[in-house]
Image (cartoon, rainbow, N blue to C red; front, side):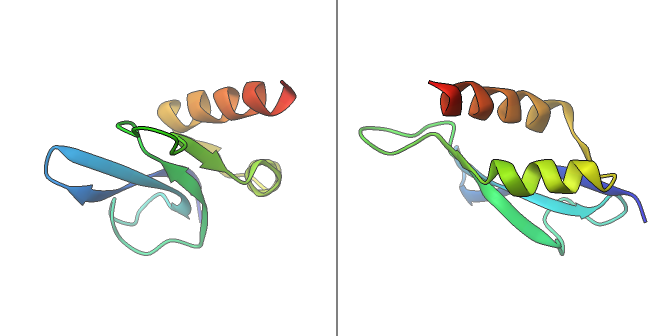
Length: 85
């Protein structure tokens, strides 16, 4: 059972938002997932946050063998950098 931390697309046409989820690598992009770790909204406006993620759970899943996709790995680095400020 290979686990991936990846994005699951939500939202409307031309206005996407994404859930950051842990899922089996063989499941479909918008299929079942094991746990929701956060939300990424690339087109966030105003006071709303672009990225919110539970870093503790992401670290846990990576420690038990889940691999993050390239995009999610970049988002995790960004979340860690903003948490240190």
